[in-house]
Image 1 (tube, helix red, strand yellow):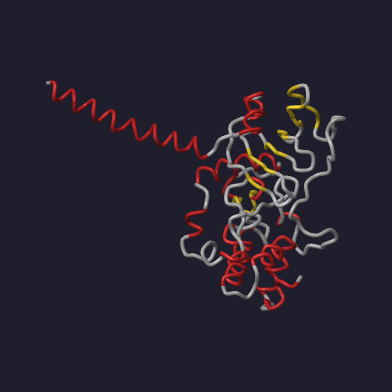
Image 2: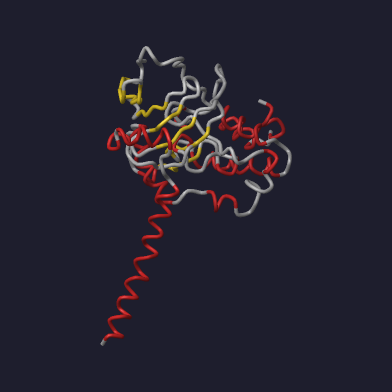
Length: 273
């Protein structure tokens, strides 16, 4: 009888320990540190739990997405702030304060918006508005670990996409939330692909919400046609016919223009625009 009880206890411990280890591993993969943690701890319910690691932007800003918005350490004035899209919360000189996004406190320095990797001003895009994301919600983000010098070891390796791709459960949760934020009249999830503006296979950040949006399959050109553009540009970069930066910029300028060129066989000048 004692042996039977011992075996039952052992079985329970074996089943519980991996679950605890898994939970601890998930917690370690996403956490707030230093100034991000201090701000979060002042208003944990308002800010919510983290849903991404810290993301280092080309302009020097550092972002971390939460369940309710985004925390930003701004290089322009060195303040760390949280926004839910309407209100901004800052741990200011006298503690936590909030204001509408369009306003500024007197002690805040330069408040110019951070530059976004989007099409140059004055660019006339060939596709319908539905083919492109809202640049305020999805400005795009690249993975700083992917460089021109290491494309053969990263995006051009056979297993890169499978390893870098975010989990299906994360993608589906994000899609549902973003369909609401985009205010699409059709909220059917199957009508959209949760797409990366800068594709993973072209060095796009795999799990940053700022690089993802629910792209409709129709009307065409839509999600399926963009997939074809992504595959073409990936092949061009990996064959050495185009630089990584040129491929990313061609897609950001107007992926529909690239699609029309490759559809008509005019591939030669895709990266020249």
